[in-house]
Length: 501
Ligand code: TRP
Image (cartoon, rainbow, N blue to C red):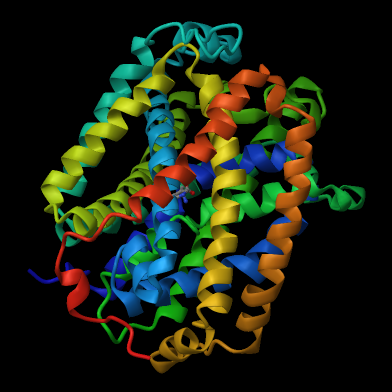
């Protein structure tokens, strides 16, 4: 059996863009930007995009194409001692996937709520009380049981996702991406154009674009910017390697990397425009300053937007458009998160795709039920923060330092990329990715380690953050190290492309 392949170059690019554009762009970016000082955030964000994001996508695309394997297998082929990084990325994808599906479930419910504006005027209380019935406090021992309103849509999301994945790379992922991404862009433009033409939109846009220079010395903002770039571009989690491993030999990976990175950030900034313009409209209507509007945090999309939608002409229409965007954008990302795990498991355990989809998908479904409990919202917040801050960022450091420096792949990878590319990787790539990126990441990691040790994240009980934040990160690490000691079951792993030096 040969390795699956994409049907066309555009199929691949759309799938990669589909993975990148997701909840990160529409749900996470605006709230992270909002929480980190709005405009203050854009400078570190752009810096991270230009010095890290672009080159990092190019790196992952060429790794996948050259070594033709899931993340663990590609790293294994670089050097067997590097395999654990791939399993760590597997673990990160798995963890993200479990809460990602839950938010998609909310988005699906909100499409339904839009039809009748069921959220009423107090949208915050609707989200937390009527819909999710959230417990007043986070607690390790009391999750308050399953909340059916969240659980049922969650199951539907999983059924859809597993069904797409089950059909394979070309028939499933590629086909869905080709329809979903153009639809998404079209619908999202409707939303953004409406938002920026509202009265008061400039208030919000000013808040978004106004730089706050004094904030630039705050390391938490830099951490947020880097985490956002990694999250949004799906970097250091194995997916870009996995997707490009299904590419034919002669592909121009660098060019495709630029297309993917710029489409993603373009879409993200567009989302920022749309959401902040809408916030400006609300500020204008209520006479409250943009920065004081209620509910930053993970509720932004589900609390503030419904309030704004209420005030629009044809609110039902815009509600459905917005939440449909969230759902479409998210599904293509969820499929890709799952694909990281599926491709790795088929190679490691010699499973076929169907068995991997059912096993891993089933397991992920079970775990995600934890977030559909009444305490699930707190769990989600802590897990999202720790998996991104202390899972993804160290994973990125390991990936760069090991691939480029310890195992000396800078030159061969650049040569491979340049062989078929219109855009040459050269000095900029070396300096930005080989030097600036690891230095920035290490500084950020240390300072944020200190902050997180001296203060407890989000004001939650210490043991809650200890177990679900730190505990989870440690568990991921242990898993990665242990599983990389098992041998590969799929014998094709050894057939070709062992590095000849
Ligand atoms: N990039 C996706 C988004 O913006 C989410 C995501 C994070 C992701 N990590 C990933 C998707 C890894 C696929 C693989 O929403």
